[in-house]
Structure formats: C-alpha cells, structure tokens
Image 1 (spheres, rainbow, N blue to C red):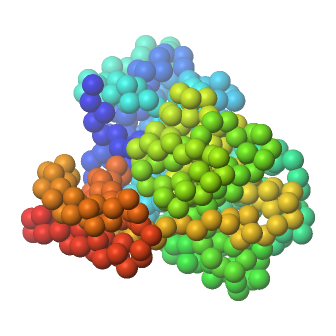
Image 2: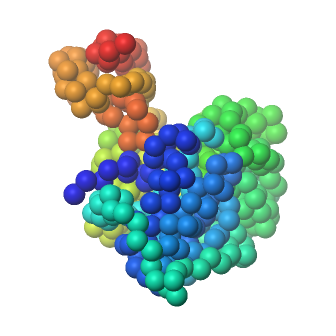
Length: 441
C-alpha cells in the first residue's frame, strides 16, 4: 500500500502548498478519524508556528466530522503529545509541527495509542482514506472538543521525575529554539535546582528555529562560553532533538550523547542489548563502543525506524547524530528534554564535566545537501553510482560513503567520513559536484 503524503516523520511541507493546506488538513483529520473510529479520542498539540492554529482548526473539523473526540493540549513538545496519548489512553495523538524547519513550513506527526510513530501500514491506510469522499458521522455521534488545561504541567512533572537527582550547582544555558519547549524546559530545569540562562524563549509565531536551536548550534556554543556555564542544551522547534555544548563551548552531537548514555547504562546494568543508530552514525562511535563491549546496530535514517528496531529486539537506547535520542525505558519517541536530563543526572552522579564523560573521538565527517529541484532522487542516485564507487574505493575500510534522498525536504544528502579529514572533504565536495551536474537546470 502507498504511504502517499507521508515522509520519514509524518506529513510536512510549506504552508499554502499541497499538502499543507486547510482543505488537505481537514481531509487528513477525517482520514485519521476513520482509522480511530466513531467515539474515539485523539490528543492534538502544536508548536509555536503562526500557521498552527489554522491547521489545528482544520484537523479538528475533520476529526469531529468523523465522530472522534479531540483533546487539545495547546503548545507542547512532540514527545509530550506522545506521552499524553499513552497516559490518557487515547486512540491516537497528533502534533502540528515541522520540527527543525523554518516557520513557513508546517506539518503533522501522528502517534498510535501506545505513543509510537505510526507504522507504514497505518500511514498507508490513512492515505487510502484520503482518496475517499468525506462522509459525516451521524449528528448525534459527531465528535466534541475539550481542552487539557493541565497538559503542560503533567508533562513537566513527568520530565522532572525521570531522574533521581537534583541539579543544584549546575549552571546551564538552555536554547529552546523559540519553539514548543519554551516554557516547559526552563521550568523543569529550574524546579530541579539548576541555574538556567535561557535563549529562544520569546516565540512570536514567525521566529521558530531562526538563528537559534539545534539547527544553529553556534549560538549555544558561544553562549556557554559567554556565561561560563557548565553545559549548554539546545533543542529544536518541537523539542524532539537535543544537542549539547560542553564548558569549553565544544559542540556534542547525538552520537556523543548516545556514547555517554550507553556507557552509563552499561555501568548501571540498565543498557539492554545493542545501541541502535542509523546509517549516519559516526564510525568513530562504533569503534569506541566496540572497545567497551557495546554493539551498534544501524537502521535507516529516521527515529521511527530506530524505535521499530528497539521494540522488535526489546532494547532500550538509540538515536541519531542530529539529536533524536530515544530512551525507551522513559519514552516512546525522541525527547530532547528527557535525553538532556539523563546527561545532567550523569554529570551530577559522577561529579564529572561533560567533556570528561565523552572521551571518544569521532571520525571526520562531511555532509553536503544538494537541492533536487524537479529532479527524481532515485534517478539521480542511480546515475551517480560510478562516482560513489570511485569514492568508496579510495576510502577503503577506513571510511564510508552514503548518498540518500531526504525524507523531509527535496534534497540529496551526501555524507562522507573516514580517518583522513582532507580525503573526506575532497570526496564530499567531489560527489556533491557530480550530483549537481546530474540535476537539470
């Protein structure tokens, strides 16, 4: 079955262009309602984008037309909506967000009753319903809309309870990307006793991810040094990503966070099975984990695929270099606040600085994005195979090459890594140039 309209993380695009239009979102709400069934319950949340209210209204109309009751959480991180969906025993959850994308984009991430990302088959079924004409539920069975006034407080309490220590004595710079965590994340850290300097906590509907947050990590790195903080935490627009800066202002990505959490889990006998990464996970992390007796299993890019593998194997830790971290013993999806709290707890428990806890060296890696325009990604990648083979031959066993189509944007992502930084830079630039030549003007 076709997963038409769905990328690696729900439905996403530019507002006003298909599929991010009021008409489509109304039909999407109705299609989700057909999956949920008359009398079902859906939790609906959103980030800070100005377009979120319009999309929420359209989704509510479609859902209630299908006979589904809607519970509004208001502005809430993606993981908060997933958590509420599970704890309230709702039939599904939807969060209106385009995550790390700029404000002209928006979309919808959908969760199952268990708080997991929908499996491919469920997205395919929704796509099939989208092709059908809307038929209203009987008038007496139309859905109702209620507001969860304490949604943010409930989720904040959950986050605070996820670690067994307080954070007194820690000076933290926190960048909330003008996004969904702008109120909850500072409250959680301050309630736990930390001294918190905030950035990106004045959203106006149009400034989400604008020179702040995980897509602009230079901001947090500079702020940590400026404020002489112990650590910097930077989230993205819906707080499902987190990156860190150590006390010297050095950026620590998702791989570094996973290394720290895997080592801590191994020591405390909490780590179950292998760490699950993706094809983008750095080779340096894989080598360092192997030296510590920890295995790494790779999946496709996307935290939905990481979670799928974690569930299938009943393992409990995985994530991506971009900062999607799944602590499955705590959450069912990437949660930047929860992941950051686990790191802070390890710093407090051991008394060590972040830099001392992350004592591995990543391999040099270069990532270049090439915009596709109207070109077909599969065709372009097929034509690039000779150039890819040449790069792989040159790098040998000490490096990797990965070219893939983005699941959220019209891009080909070119990744090269290896032990020799100059060689990595050369082949990344060469491959990106070859891809550009294959795309028609």
